[in-house]
Every structure is written in C-alpha cells, then in structure tokens.
Amino acid sequence: MPLLTVENLTATHGLLHAVRGVDLALAEGETLALVGANGAGKTTLLRTIAGAHRAALGRIRFDGADITLLPAHRRVPLGIALVPEGRRLFAGMTVAENLLVAEGRGRAGRWTMATVLDAFPQLRPKLKSRAGDLSGGQQQAAAIARALMSNPRLLLLDEVSLGLSPAAVEQLYVSLAALPAGGTTIVLVEQDLGRALGVADRVVCLLEGRITYEGRARETTRARVLEAYFGVSSALGAGADR
Amino acid sequence: MMAAPDMRVERWTRRAQGFVVSLLLLALVLAFGPLLFSAGITDRLSELFVYVMLAVTWNLLAGYGGLVSVGQQAFFGLGAYLAVRLSAAGVSVYPALLLAGLMTGALALAIGEVMLRLEGGEFAIGMWVVAELAHLLVNLDPLVQGETGTSLIALDAFSAAARRADTYWAAFAAMVLLLVLVFAVLRGRLGTALQAIRDDEIAAASLGVRVLATKRVVFMLAAGGAALAGALWLATAITFQPHAYFSVQWTAYMIFMTLVGGLGTFEGPVIGAVLFFTVEWLFGASGVWYLIGLGAAALGFALFAPRGLWGAFTERFPERLLPLGYHVVGARAAAAAGGGEER
Image (tube, rainbow over all chains, first blue to last red; front, top):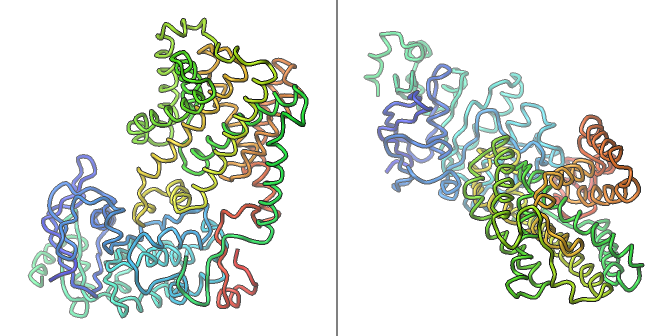
C-alpha cells in the first residue's frame, strides 16, 4: 500500500485552478522530485498535501486514512511535515527554540536535537543565534532540521535550494541524501533539474496544475523533462512513460 | 525535554534563580504595603499595579501573539461595568471585581470566535469597533444612565482607610496572579507556540501548532486581565462613566508602556508601566505638554529604540533574568560552540 495517495486533487486560489485533477502515489522510503515552471502548481500541491491549503476537490490518503479534511496541525502527528518555500523560520526565536517548537508535536522517533545536529552540523554553533540572523544556507538547514524534529514519515521540501550559494546547496544536499536511508519519504520541489534527478527515485513534472510527465529518475533525460516543463507537444507523448 | 544523553535543555540559570528570589522578596515587602506606606503612596501603588496589568496583557496579545489590538479598552470598560452590575445585583463588592474579570474573559471567548478570523490591520481596527460597540451597548443599561454614569456605591460601606487597604491588596493580588499566569503561559509549550504563530502562522501549523486554539487562550487571558484592571480602576475611582472607561486612551497607554519597556519581552511591559507611572506622577499635572511629551517619547522609542528599554538592555547583556528561554547544554554542543553554555 502506498504511503501517500493523491486522487483527482484540485486546489484553487480564488478563481485560479492551481492544481487540476492530480493523481499521485508514493511508496514508503521513496524520493519524488516535483518539477515545473513558476506557477505550475508545485507549491500549492505540496501545501495541500500538508494541510496548509484546502483541497477544492479530490482526496488525499496517508497510510490508508483519508486526511483530506484534516487541518495541518493534525497531519503532523500522523507523520507529515512541510518545509515551506522561503524557509519561514520563526525569526524572533533562537535556532534552538525553532527546533523545540516541533519537538513533541509530531511522532516519537530517531530525530532529536542531537541527531538533527549530527545531520546538519552547521547549526551546532548557531543554536543560540536568532534564526533571522542566519545566512540563507543556515536558515534552510534550520528549516529542514526543524521539520525533522517532528519525526515525519513524509517530508515535503519546497524549493530548498532557492537563493542559496552553490556551496550552501552542496552542503544541504549532502545532508538530504542521507535522509531516505533513515526511512523518510520525501517529496522535493526543486528548480535545479540536475539536483532533482540526482537525488530522486521518481520525477513528476507539472504544467498549469496538471501532470505532464512522470517517470523513474534514472530513466529520465533532462531533455524529456524540459519538454514537459515547457509544454512542448512531444512531451505529451512522454506521459506514456507513466 | 530531549532524550540525547549528552545534550539537554535547561531553563534555570544561577542568575535567574537569584533574580526570582529578589522578586519574591520585593513581593513580600509590597504585600505589607498599606501597613508600611502613607495613604497617598498606597493609592498610587494601586494605580501602578493596574498599569502593570494593562501593559502585561497587551504585550501578551501583541508582543507574543502578534495580535495588535487598538480596542482593549472594550475589556477594560466591560470589566468596570460588570463590577457595577454585579455589585448592584447584590454580589459582595470585592468578589464582584474578580467575577467581572472572569465573566469578561468568558465573553472574550465568544468575541474571539469572530475577531480571531481577522488578521493584521483588520484585527486591530476590528477590535476598536468592538470597543465602540461595547460602549454603546453599556450606555443602553438604565443603571448606567447613559454618559452620566454611576458609582460603585457598595464601597461607601467601607471606611476610607479600609477601602484603600482592601483595594491595594486586591490590585496587588490580581497583578501577581496575572504575572504568574502569563509567566506560566510563556514558559510552557503554549508560549513557544505563541511566538511561533507570531513569527509565521503557516510554518507553525505545519509543525503541529494549534494556531486558532492558541490564539483563543491568549485573547481570553488578555481580555480577562484588562477587565480585571478595569474593575480595579473602578475600585480606586468609585465613579463609572462609560466614555472614561471605553476611551481609546487606555489602549494608547498600554501601547506606550509596552513599546517603551520592550515589546515581546516579559520584563519590558513591567518596566514600561513603572516608567509611565513615574512620568505621570511627576508631570501629569502639566496638561497638554504632558501628553505631547508622552507622544514624543513613544515616537522617539519607535524610531531609535524599537526594542524598548529592556530590549536595549538584553542586547548588551544577553542572559535573561527570568527562566523563560531554552538553554541547550551538553558536551557536544559545548565543544562545537567553544563554550560551556549554548544560551
């Protein structure tokens, strides 16, 4: 049984249909890269799965249970955590306090303050710093570490490399690469196609709220994703790979 | 809070322990206020305790919860009004003050159901509308006689000295109770949740924080505290005129005390209240120049010291005097940070 099943999901922003009839299934331990141009609906899809955005139509199942109507805070104890776009750290609180917000609100598991600091050692000397004073790379590491403190089974990562220096992205991906080994299932929204194909098991491309390509990462060429990404007609044929 | 054997969270530091003991000693002295101080000082201290309550509750709402309200005079006025109403209905006068605070807190739960769906400026202005509405509704009560007002005549049964002492003790007990309650809220998981909501609601909800429930608790506590302050102010002034109690000046005072003392800190509003009280004591008779001075001071702090007096102090001396923060200590953290204590 898949860990996450999304059935005919539609999500709107007023009159705009940001996500249109998306079907998706994700097995436990899998890493899925969600790619697409700006405005394709990636962030809305991720936020709808996390409960931060209400689904207009369709159904979301997590570990067999229908969670479509559950608010975000009730999905966290089930094992869903979102690292939102723009990091959204609690800027007035210290890094330690940011991490402790999540502690005890999710599940029990291997992630504690000590283990997340092992995974993101760049945070260790910054525990007493205000989160708003960190560099972009440190903030992103803190945002992921904070989400891990709830011991998620499904980690939703939105644009983790956006606005970071190449060195910071490299350091971040070293930490991320180790997560699936611990059993964490990941949905990763990423603009850097090379990075996405490098870490994911599967790739899904969204265009105007619809899936235009889905395939295994190692069988997917960059050119094929780009066709789906920009809605070139030949990409529709690529959907046969699904 | 954490399981790792080589790393733990501590809440108390030695300095915090010393500071809390000093505070307890100060509270012990103040508890005997009417026996130690002159009548004038006892009266003024009762007013100071009310100011502290107002500043602390507004700071809880705005500084920690991010709910900036310009309508807290609604609860201040309702507290005073309900004290008059309960007293007229035969409830003993001092229990009526406490009951008025509790009833207003319960009423705030219903008001919050609507108001907490608003955000930012809409919430701020909406609360002012609530205050004006409460003012108009109170004026409809024949007991109040419109803007003519009424008095808490049950207090006439007490001698002036007994009334002064009882009001002092009631205000002191209410202030201590409120400070302890707010401290407990901020020190607990609710306090962390509250600050997370203030900084980012979506991120907080995505980490399992119950956003609306947390806001409800804080809104109710802030309303109940302001109402209790209003009821106690009535006990010091005796007369109740709706326009005086539902005036926006009360919220302006709360904002002044909090901004000057330090928004979003526990200690700041208390310092702000003491400062405001002192300035009012010394210059309150100066009429319009006193008000101009207050406005200029608030503007100056907003422009040049936005974190207030306590914020400026903690920038130079980062260790907090009250055990509200989290101190991560442990061998691995210490080794990496190059120091013994992480915070």
